[in-house]
Amino acid sequence: MTQRLYIIVAFLLIACRAALATPCQFEAQGEGRVATIIDARSVRLDDGREVRIIGIEATATTTQALTSLLVGRDVTLRSTDDTPDRYGRQSALVFIDESDKPVQAMLLAQGDAVVSAEITDKDCAAALLASEAEARRQKKGNWADPSAIKNAESPDDILAGIGRFMVVEGKVLSVRQAGATTYLNFGRNWTRGFAVTISKRALPAFESVGVTIKSLENRRIRVRGWVEGTAGPRIDVRLLGQVELLGANEPIGVRP
Image (cartoon, rainbow, N blue to C red):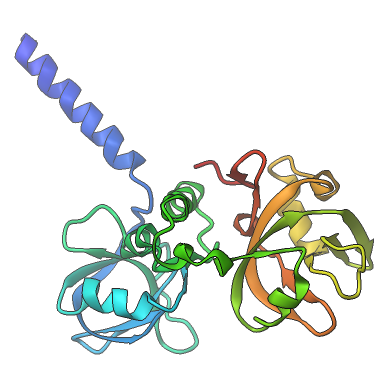
């Protein structure tokens, strides 16, 4: 084999490894051209199909950003499953033309969306979180507002956003179990302070990556999810990606 051939083979091997290492490259589940933006989480293709944009939650600028990025563009849909949801929408990561980066990552990098933590593939989840983290560091878009991340020590501010998807940071003061639910308490007053709830069904997922819930006591964490509650605000954690260890600067179960 000549030296030139060795170089060609080596180049091809490197290219193959790079392609395999590119995150979020799930199986292609169809193509189309975006005709219109339905809302901040879904678009309609020119053949009538509706596509739900997975992996993100919307901010005030998501719809406008989607319009700029997608309307009139040819896209490829990628996911692990093309089964429509109960509304008939196909859920997917959306790639413009030949781009190797999903639109979701572009929105996150601009600060025009927030990671939803629903992507369970570790490499893809890490890539999306990294895009969001860079936007946070640069205070882009949504992150230019200091109130974009709520303080766990201010439960009234969190409770005011009940029914909304929020990102909250704070120190876990105690971990308590009541029946089949584990509570991460961020306030001394358990009935009015902010808390994270984790059902017994979700605990094995944490244990599978070597994290015991009790070990989160006295740790600073960032948690994301839908705010619920009456007297005190709560976020129910069902997925590992909803929780990040701030001291270690890493999401639980995901390595960026």
